[in-house]
Amino acid sequence: MVRNAVESKVHISEALGLGSTTVTQNRQGTGGNSNLILGESSCGPQVIDEISRSLDLIARLWLTINFDTLPLGQMYPNPTQVAWEDNKSLNQAIKSQFAMNHADSNHSVELHRGRIPSAFNMAILCERYNFSIRWTHNLADHLRIDGESGKITVTLYEHIVCLWNHLQYSPNCPIPQSLLEETLDSLILLFPYEDPGTMKFLKRENKNFWRLGRCGRTRKAELDDFFHWKQNIRRLLREYDQPPRGTQQLRLDREGRNFLEFSTFWTALAVAILTILGIAFGTIGTAYAIKAYNLSYKQYVLSQKQYELDLVQACADPEAAKQWPEFCGS
Image (cartoon, rainbow, N blue to C red):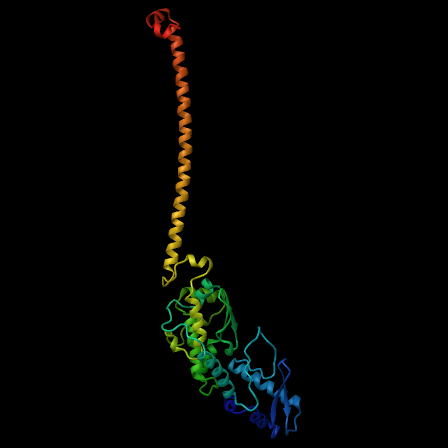
């Protein structure tokens, strides 16, 4: 298969004993149905279709790229399908796909430049910015971003070991080495294995590729270090630059980017709590003051009655009545 990566499907078919076969592709309608039309060959269209599907399947299993010249079904909505046309080599099909992605990136407006924050990772985006991850086996869908701010789904390629093996043991791999390295670097950037939060996040996702570490590579700290996935990472950074949403804005960012909002909220909350406590304690103090007043009044009334009782007892003595006529005269 490695040797045939630089050959077209037509040449591979001839090598398999189909003779001088001319194969063209005719797509009919808008449903994406593909028919292979047989030219000069002793084989029928069904055989050619089966061979084309087999080659697509072999390439898909080898390179973990969704080659789907003849549709085989979808694993999730609108997966990226790389068409390996009959007159193109496998190398050409792959380079055409990723060259097209990079061309789209070059025509976009650059809104984020410079250094990538050290705290930037996928766990933070999911926890604070309501991102979700769709894991994929299709390299062509890596870093695909769907949705809008507040509800974004990022499709991520999960087979780091395949990237590493291609780099180490497949010198003739049809996937460009720069693409393999950059995809590996993007996963290292998004999932730093030395970050405890990332490790907990990956364990919740039931992914253990973090055990491979950095595969001997260093973390890329500049956006310009990326070529194929630059635009995708730029969009993630643009979302990362936004203030956290929901209850997450109550937490101070690792880099202190939301310090003003954080301090304003918690200061206002502290003032509000102190005000409420002041009102509460003031109300309690007033209530106790009223109770103390009522108690004092009752004590006063009781002392008055006690005085009157003592006076009556004293005046009951005739000698006392003569001695203090001003008190007992009545």
